[in-house]
Image (tube, rainbow, N blue to C red; front, side, top):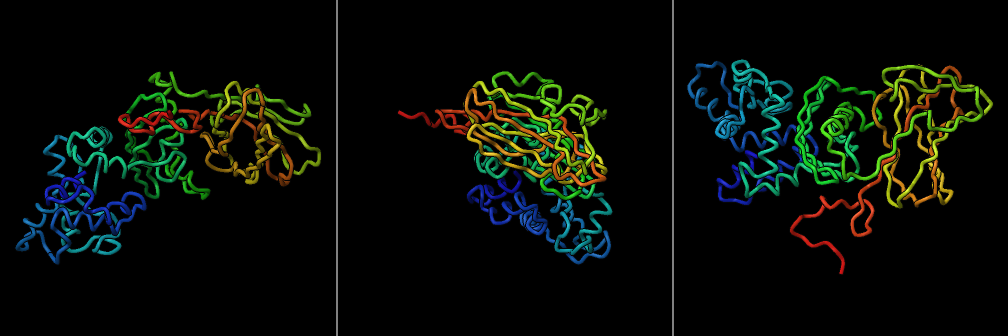
Length: 384
């Protein structure tokens, strides 16, 4: 936002710094973040050795450009937003003027309230209305991607404007969401829930269930597309007697089924999905995670056209959240199935069956996946 304001202040187009802001936002490029800070503050790192060196005080005031900009709109609060992100042109660690500034000001610190207010101002043009379309375009992200955490709990067809920040321990996100039913909300959460076990994009997915529960708790679901959740009580277990029942706070309803690997007799759990409306459906699975579970659980989705698709899922990590399999076009009355079995599970590992979620994408003008909120309200997208 401050970069857009700076561009307009130079009598240039709102996206005059696009060459730096785009990789800064989409690729999390710290080099380009440094370029942005240096440009708008007119205070690149300088060879100061002490805080009382001639020119340092003026340099520090210039480096506070972003803080002053936010404070002029009442959006700064007690936050510190001045330092660059590693690596700056100081190298892997701050040095010279930037090191002195960090010792004086402390590290960058943001809080959820003022972060949420900032997002509110951005998406509704409260600060730089001439550049709000550019800024929201820059912030648009896909759910179930490594550019979001909230997105793992949003219904398909949601519009997501997001800024995600991660470290070796933290997951922080500020987001504006337009649900398929047109309801909007601003979310901001800072947490130490980063989990790097590989299997991207789930390292930062911890806030997905928070987002889903928040939407449910605020009663924002009315008018959203159909959502079907089925645990093992609604599945067919075949043959009976092979699967055992376990309990875990990570399980969707606190209980799940499990079976040891190495068994040559095939046992399966099958969910038959009642499809009452033809359309595109997103299929996700849920399970509790544990290190003694298999890293090669095979989920099979069987459609009405006998097109069986298999997905190998690691059940050792990233439990207690929705794991996306794919989206499928299901026909009314076709009763597609999702099943998991003990087939090919190595001895010494167990396979777990818990819960599936099947959510219909919105449909507009018979176009599956197209939500009305995807289209600018001033554009008539209806066919003649």
